[in-house]
Amino acid sequence: DDDGIDRSDDDLAELSDLWLDSCAVRACRDIAESAVFKTLILICIVGNVVTMSLERFPTAMDEMEFLHICEVVFLYVFCGEMIVMTGAIGPRRYWTTAMTAFDGIIVLTSLIQLVV
Image (cartoon, rainbow, N blue to C red; front, side, top):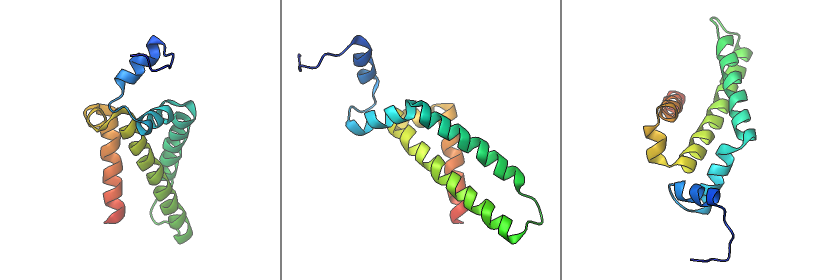
């Protein structure tokens, strides 16, 4: 099957490894594998740990508001990461891989905590 596109063996292996061969999945995979994305997520993890460590009792009202805004911003970033990773590797692989499933549970628990 010659579609006029010259693909290397690595490209073909990557395409066959996609859980769903679509532009959206390829875009998610490109984002998830990019150094910028990985660095951004790592910076957000560190930032989240720092802001969590700043919480104390009693907390001044302005400080509490700042920490809440940080919590919501980080939660949105981690929700975005979960969506990108689910798109990149597929829902089955996302929820059967220990590390990504753990991340997903943390994100979903945080979402529930925010709503309740």
